[in-house]
Length: 70
Image 1 (tube, one colour):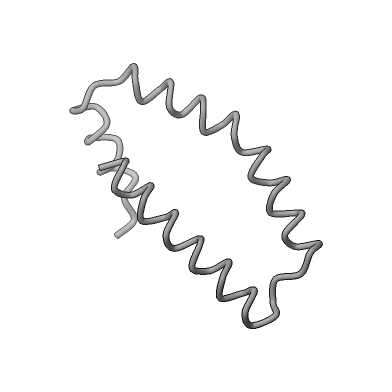
Image 2: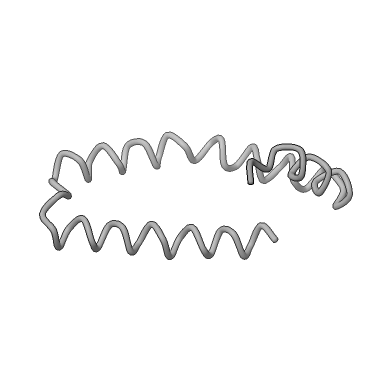
């Protein structure tokens, strides 16, 4: 489930970057800010990976169902 969502989000973000670049909405300063934010998010992603490895599938499903905003 997480792998599928990660792949989906990656495709969506790459599509957005290409679209913003083609339409002229992606400037070098904005690209720089995005890179800094992405690098700053890396420790949080690493911690999240560690947490996911420690919890069981059932607990993950329960937590993800509770936080689902659909």
